[in-house]
Image (cartoon, rainbow, N blue to C red):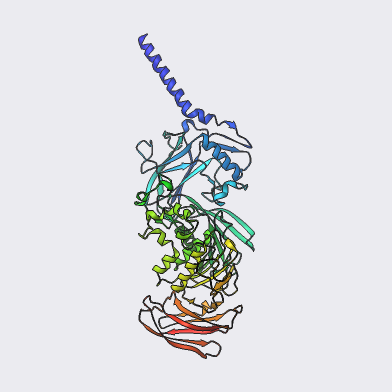
Length: 625
């Protein structure tokens, strides 16, 4: 009897433990078997003991995709809108804390007690919750699920996904476990929540086509085709390895290997399809590319530890930034996508005709890219952008991704990041470095972007003798940037290339007075260099001489003007400080010499011809050794 009593007690204890276990986990799951408000309900995926089922695992283009059934399954009777999806997610997240741990090993995974998860994935990872920008949660459009493999179509509504980028060639195994309300359920079942062998090898992650929409009108361009892509980025392009980013590519029916490609950067609250201003084109067959921005780093970069700081910005000190640097994740990510397009057989364009366009925050990123990647970017259009983040009302936004200036956060090369991303500082530190044409605008009465930094930027471009066209006025934060020749806001007529030299105009006698930084000083409306043009296709750039055809446009208020001209971004006519050169300016029609003289190359290796006379007739500038 005594033995029987002991056995009975043990049995009762086991029953009690089982009941406690049920109360701590299964009761919560089972309680989801109810109808929610609206046309949906949530229920448990039918696998016992909180075991996640891996639906599919495959390796492709340097990445392994782990697709699994989530524990919380929403049975939508109709396709949900983003408003409905986010509402449901918030309700479930407030009640049931569910996440998924991804494990990796070079041996078959039978248990995970000796392993550490390589990734933790939140619920609803199979839904594309960012495609319409930071306000996607407010949209009434149908919510989209990711396509991981084009042949398979979108994921099921209850499926999640983790994407791991391979770093070496090896055979590996994966397992997925669920954590429910703080408790991880670590039981492993072969072929259920653990994979068989997967052979991995490094490779370039390839964007996955999500959707194609044909024969649309996009920003006035009829019969266009739009391609929506997602790429789960590597650690070079994102502080979170495997994070998905969306891209949009739009092209007209006029395909050509000579086509230009324009990166379009949206402003605050913008998205793939809005907030960047017009579709800025260089020729009739330009290709449009855009992306979403996460985090809001003004299309620059952010701290390596941005997502892992253990305290809010207000509570951080300089100590928190000692072992982290700002990396140019966003700019590298954009250029990496363009490089993929260039290597792909699906697209025809000239990579040397890459340009950038944007407004507001997008305008800030546009000039930033143009200045720091001159060998990649042919020209940029920057409307109402920031050129010095140290001197604006929105400084707090930069602080959220860089860290406060008082903490002296560093860029990856050791430069103080608040200097590195200050266009004014950067240009002064790199006078010898030529950049492509910057076409930009700011409003004198802009209540968002300060006028003083626009004046400082223009003064710096003049002092450092870089190619630029500036327009300003009283349109506030809607001030448009006007392109050369036709003064259009969306159609670049010059055939500009990144690996091509160009003239930089400064001190033009037709420039208007933009003042000293006080909005009440100087002309209320005006321009710098807007009436000058050159013909890129006439440039001769070889070891012995440099030549270009220049003139005033017909809209110029005078028949003639004077201007200083600096030969920039020289490709073969490489100059040595102290070298003596000769120059002539002749009328192209009859070769009559208008001006001539000698010039000494300065300490920066630059050659500037001062007080050049230009008219509406075509003149030829020739500089020789």
